[in-house]
Structure formats: C-alpha cells, structure tokens
Image (tube, rainbow over all chains, first blue to last red; front, side):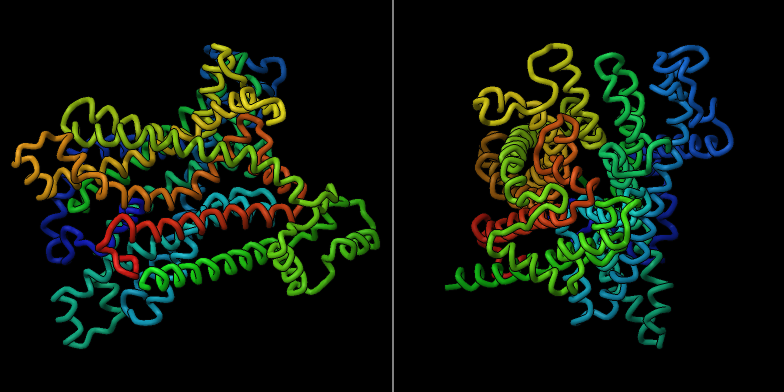
Length: 301
Length: 318
C-alpha cells in the first residue's frame, strides 16, 4: 500500500499497456480527461501560471526589484493593484516574477528525478536479478530520508541556493521515479508482444524504446506533475526559512517571510503570496491526481 | 522462533541503515567545499589563525579519523562540542528536544483525530456533497504550506482573539500550563497539515473496504454500513495507515522545523537553522542524523507492526 503514496502501483496493471491499445484509446483518454473535474481545474491553473511566467519574462507592471521607500507598505491602489512591500516594491510584479522561480524549481527537480530514476528503473526491470534488486534496495534507503531534510543538509554544506536545494529534492525523488517506471516496465515486458519482439531478435534497448517507454510515459507525466507540486512547496519552505535564494530575489516564500513581520498591521501582505503558492501547488497536484485517474483507472481513489 | 529471526533480521537492517545514514551525513558535510574554520573566522582571518582553529577543532585530521571520532563519540553518548559556542551539543539539544518532541507527538495525535473520522466519512459519503466537501478541504490542506497555515492561525487566535500566545516559549520551568499553551497553535498547525495528508489514505482504504466482497456479504447479512465497517474495517484500514505514518515521519520532522520557525520556538528545528547559518557543522550532523534515526526506527516499528496487524504477511514484507 505504500504504492498509493507515490502513485507507484506495486505492479498493477495499467489499464492499457500495449501500444496497439494506446492508439485507438488515446481519443478516449482525452475526452475522459476533459470530463474529469480535477484534471480540468488543475490543468487550467497550471496553464494560467505558465502564461503568467511567460508574460513576466517580458513584462511586469513595475520592476520587481525597484525600491521606493516613499510608498512602502501601501495597500491596494489603482497604481499598485496588490499594494507595495516594506521597501515599496510592487507586490504584483514580485508575485509574477516569482512564477518563473516556481517553474524553474520544478524543472530541475523533475529533470534529476526522472533523468536518473527512469533509466535506473528500466534497467532494473530489463535485467532483473541481483542488479535490479540492488538498484531497488538503494532506492528504498534513499526514500527513507526526508526530501526537505536532504535539501536543508545540502544547503548547510554548499550555502543557501535554490538550485542546490532543488537538486536535493530531485535526488530524493529518484526512487519514486525508479519504482514507478520499473513497475510498469515489468508489466509491459511480460506481455505477449514483447515476447514476440524478443523472439524475432529485437535487442533489449530497442524493445525499451519501442514498447516500454511509450507505455511508461503517461505514468511519468503524472509523477512529474505531483513532483512539481512538491518542489514548489519545498522551495517556498526553504525560502521562508531563509535557506533559499539570497534576499532581493522575488520568490513567494521569501515574500511571506518578509510579510510575517507585518501580520498584525496588514495581513494582506501575507495573504497574496500565500494564495499564489496554494493555487500553484493545488494546480499541479490536482492535475497529477486527475491524470492518474484518467490514465490509470484501476487505481481509482 | 520465527519472531526472533524476523526481529533479528530487521534489527540488523536497522543497524546497517543507521550506519549508512551516518556515513552519508558525514560525507555530505565534510567532503563538500568550504572550511568550517574559515567560515567561523570570516574572510578577514589570516591563514595562520584558520590553520590554528582547524587544528583546535580537529578539522586537520584525516577524514576517516574525523568520522571515527564523531561516530565513536555518538556511540558513547557524546554528541561533540559546538564549534561556535564551545558548549557540548547535548546540552543544547536536550532542552530543544523537550519542545520538539511534544510538538510532534501532539501533531500526530491531532492529525489522526482529523484523518480517521473525516476520512471514513468522506469515503462513506463519497457520492454526496458532504463527502466531496471533505475531499476538497483535504486537497486544500495539502496545498497550503505549513508556514502559511501557521501564520493564519496565529493571526486569528493570537493577534485577533488573544486566546493563545502568538510566538515564543516560556520554558517548562514556567509551569506546564503556559508551556503547553505555547505549543497548542504550533501543534494544531502541524496536525492539520498532517491530517490532510493522512485523510486521503484513510479515505482510499475505506473505499477499498466498501468495494470488497466481505463488506457486501456483511451488509447482506443485515449489518448496517457503520456496523459492517466497524467489524471488518479496522484491520484493512490500519495497515495502509501505519505504512503512510512511517513514510510521513520524515515529513512531520521537517514540518516541525518550519513550524518552530513560524512560532519562534527554540526547538530542534530552530537550532538546526541557526547552526546552518553559523556553519556549526557538528551540530548540523548530529541533528540530521538524529532525525534520520527517528525516521528509520519508526519505519522499523512499522515493519514489525505488519506482522501483528496482518497475519498473512510473512517474514518478508510483501
């Protein structure tokens, strides 16, 4: 039952494993995805954040780093929709710029977790035996270690940096990706068409590329979406603790860290970044959960 | 006989994991760049004074010797001496654990009190609006960062209603009343976050029971839903719950670090963050290893509990 936590089914059947089935059912998946409220809500939120991140690359209402003490701690106004912070920086601009950081951390964490975890999992599935067992045992040990604690430790050694922290989060999630890809690869490898491919002499690498990867991919997308949520939460936590990017950087967690001193005076400074973090995390985890239901009906929650 | 073998094997694995964790923690902090002596003395320090402090702290010895000094000391109950304050780490850590320990236990209890009844309710009423409402609330509970939850609770119950102190800890010497009062908001903050996570697992395992043949049979025999669930549910719900609890132990500890920071509690987490800023590496090593040890030991107990909870589970975890 650990399976449910990571979304890694112990070995269970993914609804449709054969590539033959994937073709005709793709349309069914899509329409199921559109009817699933979690996928729809999550997808909309994620798309919205992606648009904001792209827009913020080119334009924000004000320079997110521009200081103007004369207008420090002003509430919402026509000029500054969400007000200004203790240095007179525009809160909306900083929130928009923070979106880039949120996507950045997710990319790093997922790239590391999937980049190492998926090959390891596929290798363990292909080779089996002692090697496979060793790979998965190492995974168990790493998985026991809390991700954020690993990030904090690495931060202690290398100095505060978002990239370092996200590498640690990525490393901590390698076992999850390894486990998920191994489990579904094993299902594919035991299927008749793989046996057929083997019998007419296809090499293991070719089998992995042609048959295993396409079938493992959907489940990996689910995991990637869920890890995005974890990475955003973790990054915000580290920023809040002062263990992320150094000060002027516009990050959501750091904004809350600053805002907590003014909680009694004006809670809105805390509420805006809090709302944004919550919506971003909610978006990615709803999308992940929803896609899992669509792609993996057997797992139904 | 079987039992002794099982416990013995699990104990060996636990010891090996603890050893591996200590190596890993030491390696991360010792091998990576940045001399602790240099950081403590600052950039203005002369190379001679850095070398002298390194010698004083034992940082010039070979890494193997350093590791053996540290690990050997741990086995004898000596956690080492802080680089920065020159106090024994154990003297600093003791009072901190007296805060973090109760905080985590309190949060666990609150989390379970939320997760079990609400998770069952949301499963039983999964097709009704009230069930959906609980599920949505738990999604939100997971998405709201703990520090945000803490700040909002502090705003509501401390700054507005003045029921509880907003931050700080008076110390246990001030009496149990004020001390516990200071821990209420932190424990509730952490417990709510934990409860939201656990709730989902309670829900999905209760849903599984509701779809099972034995549940249907029990209903067919005339038991009402809650009766049937009470009869057949607990065992099937406890096993996944215990598993998640083991996996979440790490999350609770990390959550405690954040929550202590929000409420300015001088617990283990606050100490860890302070030691990281000071580069007091011995202290960081001790705390990270302590946290890993707690997680590993809890998971060892979780492994053993499978045998008690489910007679079908053999010597090896299925």
